Length: 140
Image (tube, rainbow, N blue to C red; front, side):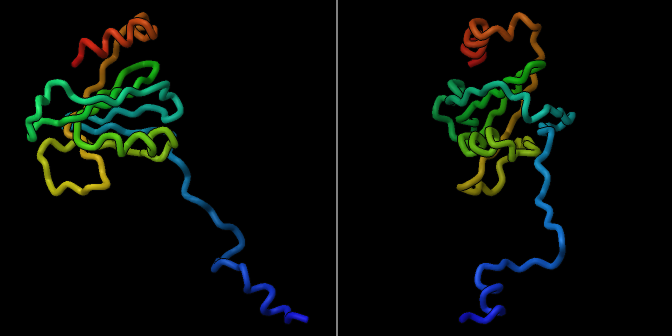
């Protein structure tokens, strides 16, 4: 017969209290540029488009990626490097803040680098799906 002591410690995690709290998921995502902070409810993201920046033309100093984030009141356009690294955390609601940093610093391979943030507030007819694809094509 096993002792009671060994039975309780076998699968037990270290815990120092009666209630364990996990970090709260943020309700909003902040987009910070050099002039302002924009905030959008994370759950209001309707869809996104990730594509190559056609204006880059292979120049290493220009951001090669574009990420369009479509929210009901606005479209957030991110320009940068390795923006595909943002997609998973965005769709799972784990991104709380995106900060644009124009000047390249040390690039970390596993992280996205956002150099520009643009927030566009179009009229409501613009958000119709058939008009959205046309607009995105015109922005590149």
